[in-house]
Length: 234
Ligand SMILES: [Mg+2]
Image 1 (tube, rainbow, N blue to C red):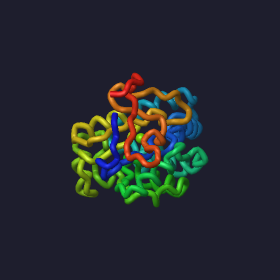
Image 2: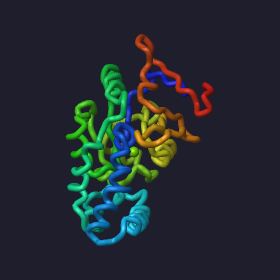
Image 3: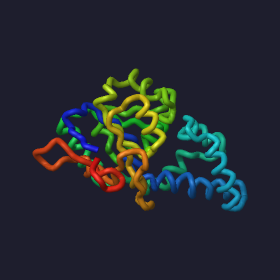
Image 4: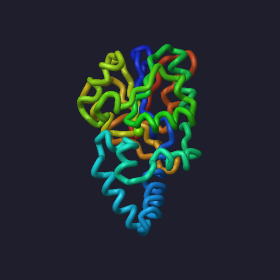
C-alpha cells in the first residue's frame, strides 16, 4: 500500500491492541478474572475458565463485551477494582507517541475510537497520559453501536466530521476493519503486533504493520510504502 499523507485528513485509532499493549486485556479476562471468580465461588480454575470463556463468547460483538457494569453484575465481581490490581500491565506500544507527534505536526485530525467502556478509558488515559495527543475520544457506548456493526462508521459521523475517502483507520480487529471497508474508509491498517506476548501474524485481508514507525515517512517526504503481506510491493 502506498500512502501519501497529503491525501489523508483524519486518522481514527483504536485503543486496546492498537495503541496499547493488549497483553493487559488478554491477561485480565483470560487469567485474572477466572482466578478471582474461582476463589470467590470455590471452584477449580479449569472450571472457572471454561464457564467464563463461554459467557464471554456469548456477548462477542455486542456492547456488553466491554461494559464493566454488565460484567460486574453478571459475575458478581468488582471488575473496575480488579483492573486496578493489574494496572501495571497497561502500557503504550513502541513508536505510538512518535506517530501521534507526526500526525499533530502535520495537522491531521486524530481521534481515539474505541469499544472500551468509559471506566476502562479513564483508567487507561490516567495510566498512559496519551489523551492530550487526540482531538477527542469516542467510545462506542456513546455511539450506541460496537465497531463490529456495519452501521457504526456512519453513526460516528454524528459525533465527528470526516470524509471516509481521506481517512485512515488503525485497528487490531479485522472485523472492525471490514465494517470500515464497507463504509468506504480509504486507508485501513491492521496492527499485527497487538500484544507484546504474541508472535505477530499479518492479516490476509488488510495491509499490516507491526509498529507505527512504518507509517512515518523519512524526513522531507510525505509518503510511505508498506509492503503487502508477502513482502512484495503492490
Ligand atoms: Mg483493539
